[in-house]
Length: 275
Ligand code: G1P
Image 1 (tube, rainbow, N blue to C red):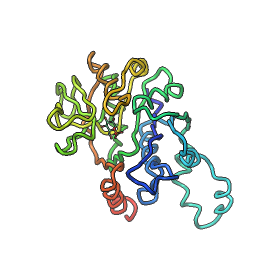
Image 2 (cartoon, rainbow, N blue to C red):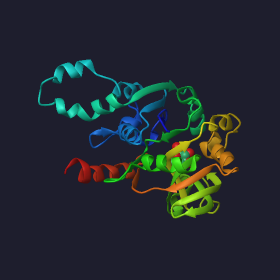
Image 3 (tube, helix red, strand yellow):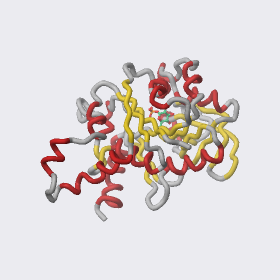
Image 4 (cartoon, rainbow, N blue to C red):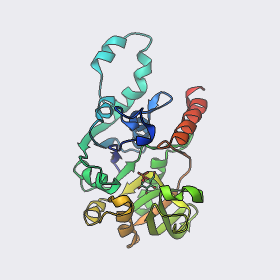
């Protein structure tokens, strides 16, 4: 049973400067909803109502977003504007939000380890909110993965085919296909060149992790970019058959890049907001 989801939200968002100078990148709105709220809604839909946020300096707006604003509630109570708050009230009512600060940016693996006190000895989901995943009319990507966890009981990474010229931005996997869309991972490489990449299946920011990952990360040396990489820790689990890669159903937008963010905005406006 997966109850918890980790959200590493300490990163800087330099690609969106100056917008992200004093505002967390996770609070950038895709139309009218901050990126991180899409991720939290996805986790809650998958049954992971306990949301563990690994934050950092300058990220207080995220904690405030998942709390009541008394002043705002007072101002709009009984007015025609009150329904505009409903979506975030629903999220706050359904979720439990815990936070820990990552004091130094030493990599995604380090962010996961920083979240250990909030997770404890149980399997958990992880959402990188830069990756906006939508599966309109069907189960969310994390819900699809939670179902798969019931079957395999091991760590799972979401993957998607990407073109050669983009492969260097991702963790890349290769392994043995078990059935359509499901691969038992044998190799994982963080940010390889197109020539070195073991396939064109790139890891997207949705994970299910078993709690032994924390001990593995503690023993993982810095890798690509000098950072402690979750991909390197997952390779350790994969060595004993403990990682599945899943080609999910749905669309994913790379909201960590300006073109992906604009594409997501247009898509959400046309398909969710305007209708
Ligand atoms: C992280 C992971 C990478 C993964 C990517 C998905 O990289 O390290 O393996 O493919 O997220 O978005 P980042 O985007 O933080 O550089």
